[in-house]
Length: 170
Image (cartoon, rainbow, N blue to C red; front, side, top):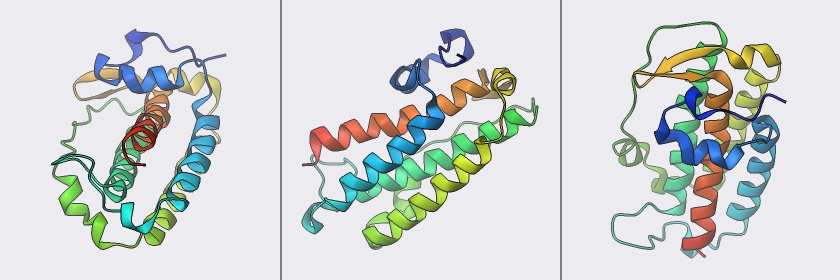
């Protein structure tokens, strides 16, 4: 199928994320990822929701907020690429997003509802795309990226952070 993505279709920075989904259909991974993340957060004790495993590290609520922020940005890029938009898209600095998002001030329930809504929107957006569309190329962070690589980044980024949550928070 089309999911063996060559490194020439994305910037090396995204290699970790693309490797998490290499050879797998990221559309399927987005559904599985949602289910895994929901189960993990639903089992998270209340006293661990704002736990930091080290100074300056994000809390589980902030990690969820970061996953959502990144998905919005990556999905926006994918949307533009899917429409044939060749206009270069700027990068983003994730660090100011966390304090601005005020994720720890919100209930975990409200964050999970937003997460599910966001994932529904992402899945709805990519559902009608056909295989040949995934070969379209756009430009983000001054580097060309294919649509299939951009969608793989969404799925792989979530998987990357899910592994960190499993290893360092419980």
